[in-house]
Image (cartoon, rainbow, N blue to C red; front, side, top):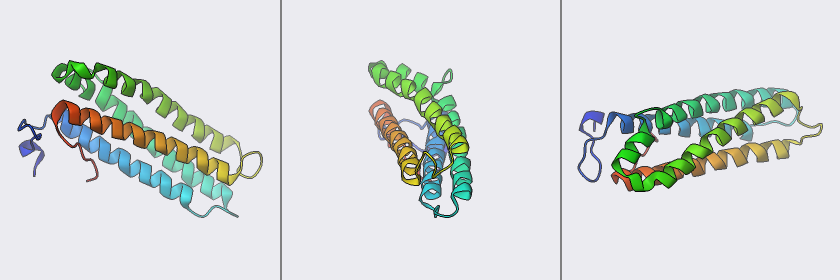
Length: 162
C-alpha cells in the first residue's frame, strides 16, 4: 500500500506527518538493533575495538534520536498534530517530550564514558553492557508509549519495521 493511499483504521488518510513518523520509527528500530548487535559482539581481548564499534553504533542511535525528536516536537510535527486531533492526550505528549532530553543526554553520556573509561579498569565489560542495555530498554519503552499515543489519537498501528 502506498503512503498516499494508506488510511487509519478510522478511514482517514495517513497524514504526511504520520508517514514521516512511521519512517523515523523504523529508523529508530534499526539503530536500536545495531547497538544491540555491537554490544553483544565479541569483546574479550579486543576491548578497544569493541568500544569503538559500540560508540559508533551509539552515535548513529543519537543521530536517529535527534531526527525522531525533530519530527515529533517541531512546529506542526507529530505532537502538534496529535494535540490538535486529541487534546485529551496532552499529558501523554508531555511525558514523551520530557523523555527526549533524557534519552539524548544518556546516549551522549554513555558515548563519553566509553571514550574515556577503558573497559577492564574501573568499568567492567559486564557493567558497560548493562548500562547500554538499560538505555536501549528506556528507548524501547519510549517507542511503545509513542505507538500507544498514535493508536489512541488515530486508531493506527504506526508500525515502523519496514
